[in-house]
Length: 133
Image (cartoon, rainbow, N blue to C red; front, side, top):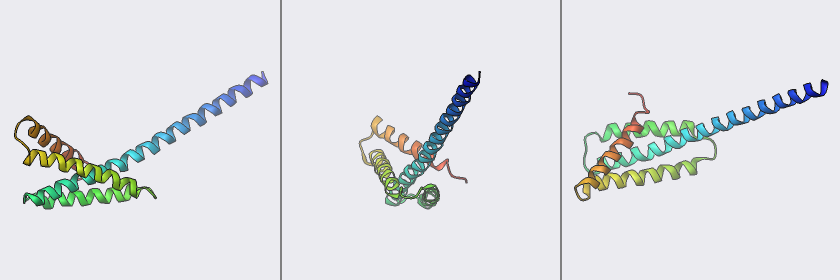
């Protein structure tokens, strides 16, 4: 009976260690996802800000403030040594958002331009929704 008790205790310890490892990995993944999302949103809002400057949109100052707030969130959440990766995500998102905005404004009219306009607006709104105010 003593050998069985040892095996059960060993199995419980192993399962507990495994569950803690899974929880730790999930927490690390969610942290990475969090600062990745902040980096992507900073890039998107940067593209929107610059596009609004280009077309002289009066909402550019408000968008710039949202971009700056998102950049502050990114800086606060960014782990040590991840600045290069975050900048890569930020630039990729900025280029993608700028492409959508360009296509919506300067591309041919029709379904493709409408789709680009809707996507650009939705993505920027999703990012802005993370911020208070």
